[in-house]
Length: 194
Image 1 (tube, rainbow, N blue to C red):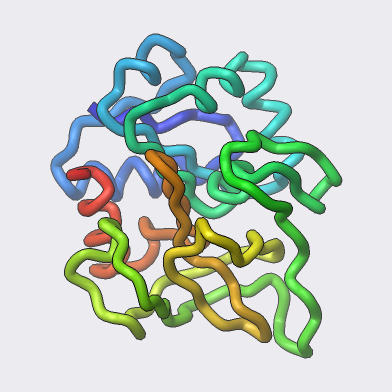
Image 2 (cartoon, rainbow, N blue to C red; image 1 turned 90 degrees about the vertical axis):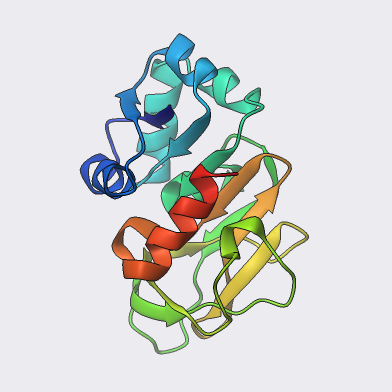
């Protein structure tokens, strides 16, 4: 069973619909026991990091998420709050991945970074199985994770943007796989079958 954490500030319906299309049982939940018992956990996110962290704190989910041993996927803001700190609201985050999330610099491009962009990578990731560099996915964001040892695939938008990250059992996509057509469906399927 897949637990989709209901932070109250996320794109829950579109993520749930994408999991449903893959014929996977899921539950939208804030129940600690359900999250801990799930085979996979998805942490979606849309909106502001401060609101998301406040919601997780109010639900007593911060220590729960940090100790999960099953595969966990953070999507967009859900990926960004896996890091130690974000400039969005100048707040500490979950501290699972190393580094600080910062605002995308102004290169004369539209902000937020919104729309389709290609993925590039030179090392394998189980989430990219069956895909080739140059495949396109859908982004909507104004902040970016740091490029470091957790970066598995990137996109370019004036600068290198970490697009897919992982460390141990934690994975993150800056893009929205649930809005990225066949490529996003395959990435989700790869995650759900880890």
